[in-house]
Image 1 (cartoon, rainbow, N blue to C red):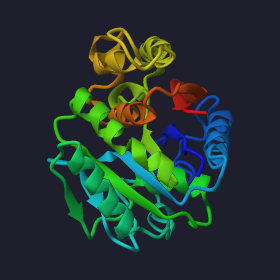
Image 2 (image 1 turned 180 degrees about the vertical axis):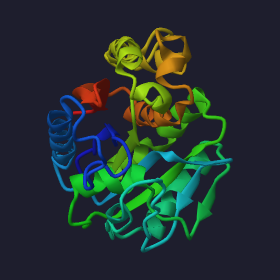
Image 3 (image 1 turned 180 degrees about the horizontal axis):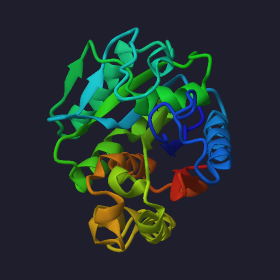
Length: 274
């Protein structure tokens, strides 16, 4: 089987792709919505052959140890607040896979991680919103893996490296987050835009490096907090850390800029292997 790619995709804000949120009057929002929606649609075409399953690492799930979803029929977690009623009626009934969850735990254990499983957890909106755009018919077997509490960069790079064998087993690994995530400043464009542009420029440069080496991609990402505007772009880094898992899973493969645009005027980017 051909090796599966890995991808880091921005998941936008709340249920943005399917519900009117009152942002439609923001300057340029219609074009932004269209651009991100079309990019997410294109993610289904990244694998050269159809994946057997998708493993998602979302910025909306953290546990003390890497925890894998084992529910064969995961419900949806409407883990957002203050949106119209239709935001809580979205459906995306993709099947889970206890067998894949077991395989994930085995790989992580072999790499020295303690692990856990959650038989009740459903898909959070970091999974079901972008994946409903990518696979609207919910036909793709999907499971989630949590981030690790503390959000240590090296831990998540190592986590990704442990997951890399899945790529040769038909599993498409997707990180779902945002390359800029400061909700307090995001709606203040005058403050947010320069910070997002500076951090995104640094991030694109870091991602273009070869993976290995003291100044390589992975080592640079591990020092992300030293980047221009880093702690204003990510006051808390849970939406960036899925990218580090993806970088680890990419191994020596290049992670190219797959899409770059704006969301509410603020620069965000996506990355993927070929």
